[in-house]
Each structure stands twice: as structure tokens, then as C-alpha cells.
Length: 491
Image (cartoon, rainbow, N blue to C red; front, side, top):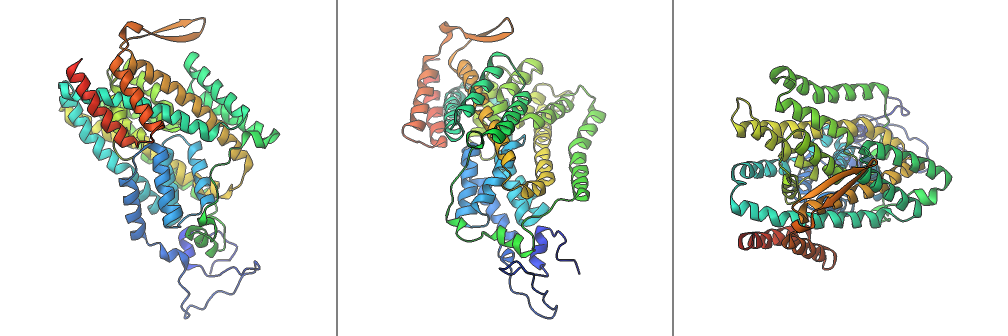
């Protein structure tokens, strides 16, 4: 029989051999012949969780904000499976990580519910609908993008995507920029990346350090409080009762477990990459796609918006996988399909291999590269969650972590603003020149190439979303239709 002071995993709570009284003392374990009362955990069966994660996956439109809102409504308010405070604590950790925070949040909560298999199911289902949708759209795009109708539809989508990115800057800014230091971090982040091309990881590390140190000096100015108490806090949510039933407030991390998890997921991450290099050579497009998106998986702090500029520039200028402007087409696909926006990597991989298939059929090469890009992007997400979640549960309420998070989130506002400006220049103007003057980068549009149709569509989409609160999907659909009409009649 295990000691009552020994750490127990979450699933062991279902078979807890001791219970904690209200006064903190431990009751005697029940005899084996006696039937233990039904624990709160048993109310969440794996089959029921599977149905809920399918529902979340199908409804995961609207970018990270919409996806997180869907999970909050279903898991916190409707099902009462997880408390508000634990939900926000998990979200804070996921925002600190490279990669899509909404997918990682689903993985984290799935892990809380049913450990590794729960995290795998929740995280995989979150990606699967978008993967299938974008794969189909990529095939159509590669085969028929020269058709006038396809060009016309994506003309309107690009303008609407610009409005979506601007709305994202305003939304994140309202939530995060509440004090003068937070504004300072955001402005500094924008200037650093837009005018001086400072690498994003450097900006993230600097913001985390500033937030951490600032939180120690003046916590009221550097710690952003997210969310408010809800009815779910009135009584313990099921996850909280599950953990307490096991005699512990959270699953406790151990060195042996951490080594096992790291070894397993690092092998799943890098062994396929080594196999690609061995089978096709280090310079083949499959290997290059694997290497590039493995690197990107480490620096994608702040989600897709924060790294799209870097991704677009690298895949167009360095690798030649995309033509100028095609990143906006890929983002339009990701915006209009369920799943994380970073799934745009699949489109990038597909087009790169489609244009350089070697001896393979272009479509087969594109499908293989889609799988490689997706694998290298999301396998690290499972590593971060399965390795770090036990430690994060042990750090609930840690103010230093919250302060570092606030600094990073403020910097992300500046980086997303950089993305909005970059998108705006390339959507509204046919030609943009870039100059370097004394170490400062300047992007100057050629005003004669301003497209009035793109300006009108982007302005209309922005008004629809900000003034009339029209949803993203209807806005994109309307913009695509109007853009197609304008393109067919005028362009």
C-alpha cells in the first residue's frame, strides 16, 4: 500500500486509498471489501471527454481568442470540469510557450483530465480538422491558383485578413496594456523588430526579464490580472475535486518522469528529421522543411501572428517556397478553417514541395511536406506540455511567473503591430521598397501602386468587425465575395 504522503498521479485519484477530512487530518483507508463512494473523477469518462474535444475541435474558428473562449465556455461554464483560476493558470503557461497557445491549452486540460492519453487526444483533435481542410485547399490552390476566380476570391480574403490582424492588435492591447511600463515594452518591441530587425526570441527574453524584475519592484504595474471569478468558483470544479481526492493539490513532478518524457518526445521530434536527411539528403525540400519548422517551433512565442512576418520573409526570400503575397493566401485558409492559425505552416510546406518535388509527383510531394511541417510544428507542443505541466501546477500563484508573462504579452502586442503594418503595406500597395539607413530599416510604399479596391475592402471589413461586431467568418466570406466581384470587373 502506498504511503499517503507519496505523490500520486491524477488517474490514481480515481482509486484513492485515503481521503482528507475538512480539518486536514487523514481518514483511514477503506477496506477492500467495502465499496468506495463514486469519486468526482469518475463522472468524466474518457468517452465523454472525447466527445467534448471533438466538439471543441469543430468549433475552433476565430483564431486563438475565439478558440480559448470556446474552451472556457464549454469546460469552465457549461461542464464545470475545470475552475476559472486553474484554467487561467494553464493559459498563462501556454502563452509563455512557443507554439499555438490554444492547442497547448487543450492539451494541458486533456492531460489534467486523463493524463497522457487525454492530452494526446485533446491536442491532436484540435489540429486534425484544420489539417484536413487546409490540405484540401492547398491542393486546389496549387492546381488552380492561375484561374481568375481563385485569384479574385483570395484578393478579397487578403483585405479581410488585414482587418483581422488589426483587430487582434487592438484586442490584445486592451487586455494587456494597462500601465505605462506595459505600453513601454510594447512600443519598444515594435521599434526593435520593425526598424532594427531584432530577432523575436531576443525581444521575448528581454521582455520576460524586464517583467520579472519589474514585478519584484512594483507588482501592480507589471502583473496583468486576467479574468474574473465566475460561478464555477462557487464550488470546486471536477478537476480540483479529482486532485484533492488523491490527497494532493496537483500531480507532483519527479526527475525520473521528466527524463522519460523528454527522451520520448525528443525522439519523436528528431528521429523523423534524421530519417528524412538520411533518405533524401540534407538539401532536399523535405529535410529543409523539417529543419525550418523545427527551428520555428522554438521561436513561435505569441502564436502565429507574432512570427508570420519572419516566416513570410524566410519562405519567400531565402527558400523560394512561396511567391510574394502567397503567405496572405495561406493565412486566409487558416483563418477560415478550424484549428490553430499556425497551421498555415502546412500550406507553406505543401507549396514548397509542390514547386520542387524532385522525382516525386508534385501533389504527393506536397502532401508529404504538409505532414512534415505539421509534425515538426506540433510535436514540440506536446513536449512542452507533458514535460512542464506538473511543474506549472506546482507554481500556481507564483507572482514572478505572472510578471514575466505580462512582459512577454506586452512585447507580443508590439510584434503583432509590426505584422499588421507589414501586411497592410503588402495588401494595399503593389510595390514596397526597403532601405537601410545607418542601421535602421525603412519600408517605403510606392504610392502609385495603391489599390483603392483593397483599401475599401479592408476598411469595410474593419468597420464591420469593430463597429458592428460582425464575426470573423461572415466578414471573411463577405470580403471574399465582394473582392471577387471587384477583381472580375476592374482588375
